[in-house]
Image (cartoon, rainbow, N blue to C red; front, side):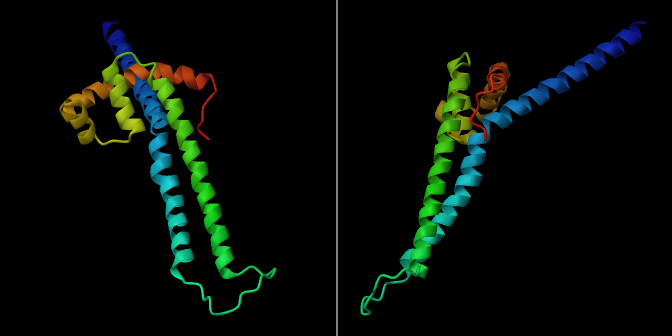
Length: 171
């Protein structure tokens, strides 16, 4: 009987630990959305915009020829239009990032303890690595990891409540 109770208690602890790990993973994924959009989507669109800008500015116009306005769209005009569309796309991504940051800051600011809020902001909003975070907080990287683990435990129920409310910028 005692062995059965111990086995049951052990299994319950394992299930609880797995549930906690899944919950923490979901919280980290939600917080990490700023980094993902910034590093992937924005970087890709900025690269397209820069390439189009280079295409526009590379070739010099030949002013020796008489230019007459026609309804025909030239290659230069097509490149300029493409660049304009790319710039608008970059602006839309920047607006999306601003919304994501605002939402995450609102949630992070509900976490009790300024050290926990600071480490979450440095990691997920300012997208700093552990060395940079440790340096800015005057702690060791190891201590920052301990603070981070505790911060994730503290923010998890806040994020869950926020997501249950259905008002999220993650689109």
